[in-house]
Amino acid sequence: MGGSTAPGAGRFAYGTRVFLFRQARYAYGFETSMAFEEGVDPPERRFRDDDGDVLCGGRFAVAVRRPDSGPVEDEFSFTILPTWEDQTEIELRIHRTAEAAPRYVDEAGCEEIGCVTVDIGDTLGRPLHERAIRLLFSFGRSGIEVEAFDPATGDSHRVRLDVDRG
Image (cartoon, rainbow, N blue to C red; front, top):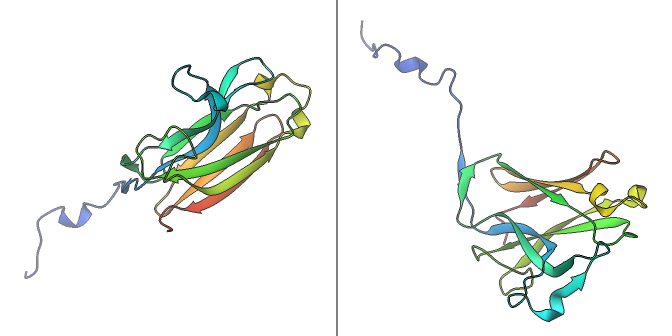
């Protein structure tokens, strides 16, 4: 009989799903404006958008925190609104940093690693909240794919970034 194995030993892999985990070496996110916090945000970052909201510019919106880990192919979705009624494009600057929870994109150690520009000119004249785009971060084995999707027009823009460069 020689060479027999335990029953089922050769079938372990059948029907299984392989999960690959990746630990983030950096915090990844994008530049945005968020509600201004009096006493926290510096006054020079304060501005008012066309809806009258008081905002803080240059904020780091975190998509993945360092050193979080999760399954490869995880996706993270965000809604982005234009700031100005006459705005015809949204430029999404993608950043990374070794800090776990950065507040601003211009802090020491933060670096821009990519950019996605979305033309929103076809939605001029609509209220700002009706001009939202969807931003989707997809984390793969060696890279990040960032997709900006405009539901009003169906336009989609993508950029792929190497997370291990540098």
